[in-house]
Image (cartoon, rainbow over all chains, first blue to last red; front, side, top):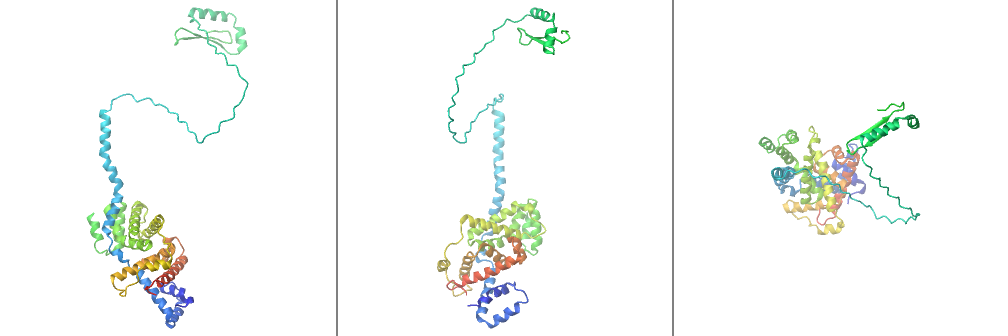
Length: 194
Length: 199
């Protein structure tokens, strides 16, 4: 059993980690103390053993290991190249055999996502509201151009009230039987009409 | 690339120059040169991994992973410096990852573990005895804390200076000296408790 006080300094001395100033004292102690000398010898033997390669390192198939490494590096490339002809053939087949037709209209799908079940809200009681009456406009006969001009002339006979009331030109839109033709009659504030 | 292959097998007369050449070629995409770079370092990396993990299979996996990471990071490697310390850093991490994955940290009490280990044969020069002693050494190394084990192996096995070990482990030199010394003492005491082990 080595001297407890000298265990660590001897371990540092063996590894060359002891300051030069402390080394002579340790050397003197090792020469005097057989237990510490044995401790030092064992530490030196451990160092020598560790500095050697493990025996198994001689038996390993290093070439095989390199082959595995190389295969692992090349694997992504190989996969890509392997599928390239297949992808090219598939693309050609689509171009040749696929019927030419307009692209289908995109359909929107509405996906409702519910994060968590929401508790049903308490029913709200409100006074009954009478349903609004559906007002359907009466179909009017198409206005003829002559009738429209007559109406405009009747308005134009006394422009002051209209111009004063609005402060801006009065505009009259007459829809005809043709949906593409709309007659617009404008009465300006100074009474001119176009 | 036959030129690179020939250089790698010519007894490594100028290892740093060969390494620099292989590294430059590998960076340019030459896979043969990369393979020669692996050949230059794989024994050291495997041996370190073997003593770090205590298992041949794990050491193989760690070695392979180390060089695959090297290939992925080739562009970031400084061509003016040896790739060795970088490899040791990556190998340490790979061994740590493997150990974490397999949870190999021994939880067997030392006395039970020692009872299962074969005693050193009377003839210590024989191959069998060497293997037994190596098994004992590795089993005891696994009893050390990870950082102490790594510091000890990088110093004693790879012969790296304290400053380099500190850089690899991300520690100070003072810490590394302390870790190495503590690991030396612990390892010796652990080995001394094995029946038939050197004490």
